[in-house]
Structure formats: structure tokens, C-alpha cells
Image 1 (cartoon, rainbow, N blue to C red):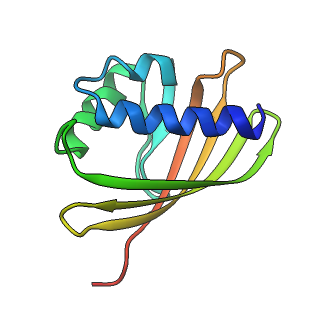
Image 2: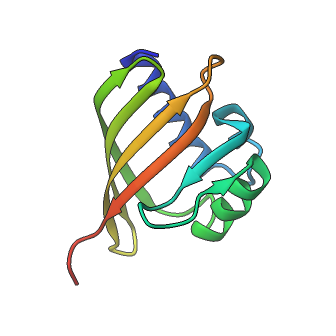
Length: 119
């Protein structure tokens, strides 16, 4: 992997979040991918279960949000990025994403470290 391919994957993730359904996930994640939604949570494993989590977490493809990203590091098949998301409802998150990629460029292991402002 390189910075450009990691950034392209992040752009694809945002595009998939904005799309109806979960079909775009198959281009982003391997069939047996693991998705860790937070450092102390159980990983979601497999494309089907990731799709179910995906649909439960978002309001839908019309959800209003703005997302920015900055690649922190790429080392071999691992990419790390800072992500900032601001939703139309006022929620905001700063995330650290750790992505381990398979040889075909899809993500095999995804770790998210989400942080929100103190309430």
C-alpha cells in the first residue's frame, strides 16, 4: 500500500456510506474482514455482519455529514489515518483508523478509535 491507495480507500468508504444498501462494502472489505468499532468493543467479523452493523449505525444514504481525512502513516500493508466527521445533527467525531489491507487492496482488518467532544 501507499498513501494514494489508502486515501482512495478512505474516499471509497465515504462514498459507500453515502450510497444506499451495503453492496459497496464488498469492494472495500474482504469477505472475512474484521471491523473493530472501538478499542474495547468486540470485533464484527465477516462482510455480512459488517453490513448489518453499517446499516444499524447510519441514518441512511441521505445522512448529512462532512468528512475530512489525513493519512498519518503507511507501513507495508497497514495504513493509519485521522478522520474527522461532522454530522448535520451536530454530532462530531475525531477518529483514528488503523487499516490492514489484503493484497487486492481491500481491507482485511479495520480498527476505529472514535472520540467525541465532552458533553
